[in-house]
Image (tube, rainbow, N blue to C red; front, side, top):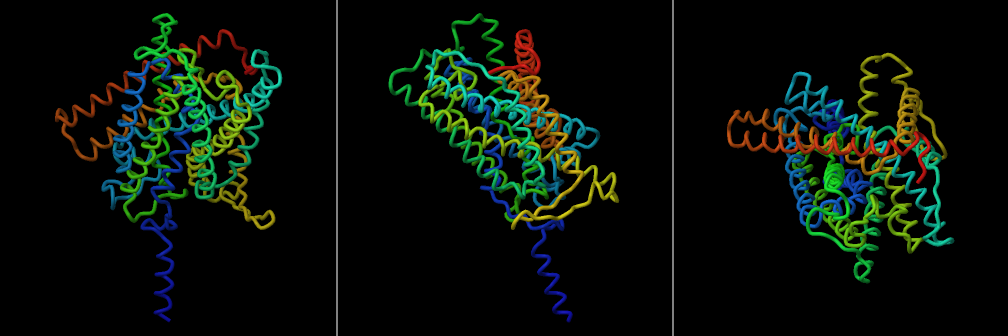
Length: 472
């Protein structure tokens, strides 16, 4: 009898990790799929425009710089999943928990505000981009039948509402563990449309139809002031496109398809960082350089939208379908940490509430589901609010730049650097301390300048735009 009890305990133990949670089964490849889904998104298609504002030398140099800095600080962040030891310490299931464990005080509240504000902003950006992609399909088909000189504009609000409706349904999926298939499909879609954009650009250049480009400073047809504003917005686009620190630790979260503990999570995550950022750099440079070589100073904000390519129409339609499918998945990747944080707080606040904690199983055919009334109500309200905000301010490049400024510095630079200094107990004034602080200061000033440029651009757009009446 005792032998049977021991074997049962050992069997149960083999299904649990060292924190008593179900065995984590993620790998560097599944983590990379989550990261790529979030990174190779709408921001990639704006990089050709960013290159057009910066010129070849500055544009390529800054994309490589952002990638190197991102890899370095992401690896610092990977060591913060456990505290105080990166291999045997207590797990931190969210970014703000890692900040609280390493920095103490109220810094984790600042982190939470920045992180979740940025995630909400990304959700708004994805909603806007998806609606514009659907409108682009209609416009491309219109141009195909009536000629590219024809004029047409469509109200985007119906498509924003349609996207929000689908996301309300997808948001009822409990967590990332149930969304791995969606992340993989979304990652494949991102490769698909990025490849179509780059392929069309390269084909245009090979045919000798590319426009004039510049080695330095981008466009020569605008005033120096406008050039400066656009260069800063371009930097914000690059920052947003390359940053994923806000969800890095959440990919290792207990409720997600997270990283197993052998080999150590920090080493697996560092490998995932290398895979993801290497992939990111290749796609960024191919898309940015080929797009800029094609359109030159007239490069549109997004090369696959109606202001970019118009033929072959079926391929542009397919690329925009890929964008829509990808962003359906990417939306869930960025909002799941918000859902998890709110639901965890609610569960702790009202542990005996059946409305908050009750789970009601049901099935549709052979598929089994678990319904939570709190999840249904809260997540639906969240998606509705995001949808309303998306209808109110559909500014593509300026929105991307502002999000990049808000999120890149604090989440990708400041907190990883400060946690590293605290964990390693680096003395003030030491060479490494000075180097890390200089890195943080440079990116802080850069982010402030980008934010000013983005706000300036949005202010200009507001002067010629009516709320909830935007047509593309």
